[in-house]
Amino acid sequence: MNLAFISHPTTPNALRAISALLTAVAKEKPNVGYIASQPDPDREFFTQTQRLYRSLNAQMSVYLELESGFSHEALNALLRCDVIHLSGGDTQRFLQAVKQRKLIAVLQAFVENGGAIVGVSAGAMLLTPSIASAALCGDEVSEEESALSAVNLVDFQFVPHVTEEQSNQLHFKQQLSELKSPCYLCSDNDAVLQMGKELLLYGTPTLYKNPAK
Image 1: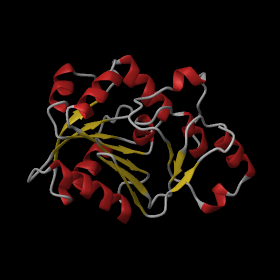
Image 2: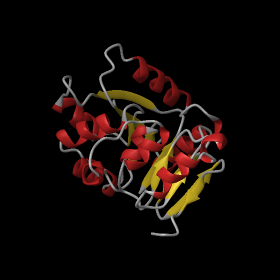
Image 3: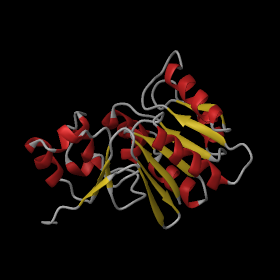
Image 4: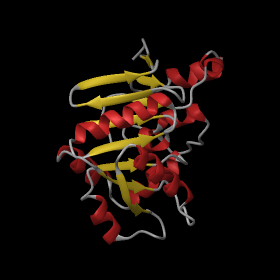
């Protein structure tokens, strides 16, 4: 199982983590597919991400939107890729779209069959047991806990974009204590990489375990 949990994709440690994952794919030029967290009509974010992967000697030619522009043809092409990139955005909206398209089991099977996934911010939180952690980085999370269950490929949650000032705030600590799973807190220049059974940390991610749980 090869998974990258990224806060911000263009920081040095994020690029190191993505590069390591691409190397593990063991192809001269891995093919990466992109899932948009919400419509990107001008393909602005897709184009930026294409450039990023091109700089890492990978190609990205598949774009999948999950809302009105959804295409089964694009989904089939995506599942033939070596790597899937889950974009950042509104975490709850992204999860709802993934569930509406019945992609939870599809993504789980993709990984079980040897595919790799890079999750950025919201996309990274989707890979965990629950997106409840999205509330800690400013997302509005309004559903009941049971509706926040996600792809569940690892046993920890993920909080991107954490600053030192934020981590010392009482409200942040209270929100953190409500999470059901251990959680990695990552600044923009931190990344977590699951490579098989090995967990690799880039930068200084902090693992929070609630002593009461």
